[in-house]
Length: 124
Image (cartoon, rainbow, N blue to C red):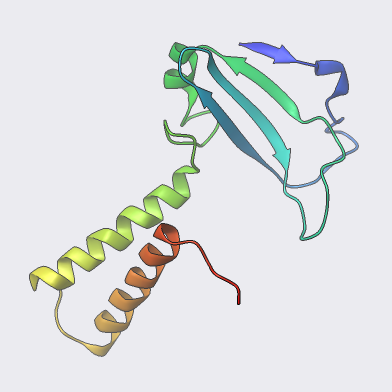
């Protein structure tokens, strides 16, 4: 692991903003991970976040435990939610989920979540 521009990182003792890890995966060049501040709508990034360059082996070893990201760089929680939605949809379509109003509503919510991930929102 190699830190990048460590002297520009925010001081955690002073800055208590919510943060999340972001990964930029470049095959052959390794992975760059940054601990970015969660921005409010309309806010611009005004800092240089904590940033590390990892080798492919370091990324494979640490991606989930240290950074909470999948191998492709998306948050583990979002991937788990999406997998659960697909499982629910499959159970209902296979007839493995009892037919009830609650299960139908849950399946439609799962389908809506899947479609939201797969499509880009259009504003007219």
